[in-house]
Image 1 (cartoon, rainbow, N blue to C red):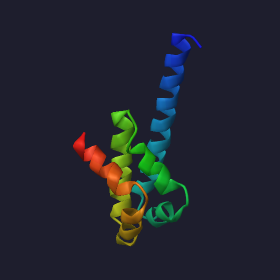
Image 2: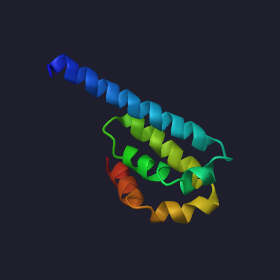
Image 3: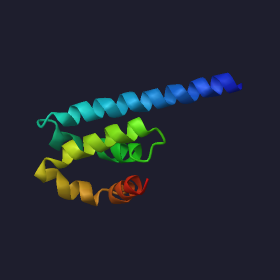
Image 4: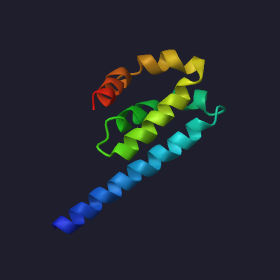
Length: 95
């Protein structure tokens, strides 16, 4: 793969990540969706992975989604106990 294609592939992957995390953020913005997102098997672990993404825009959208989800009191304990959540948040604060 030449350098141009590699760069284009990387940009495409970052845009895909940004698109996905923005959609998740938009869903989390609606209070009616918050419990379902946290109870879903893949959403919260996926969101945690976005907190460690190299693109700051992806991390920012993931942080907004986490904030929205945490506004629902019923979600907080599950979120705190989710594997990697607290460590990823600590890493974001250190950056």
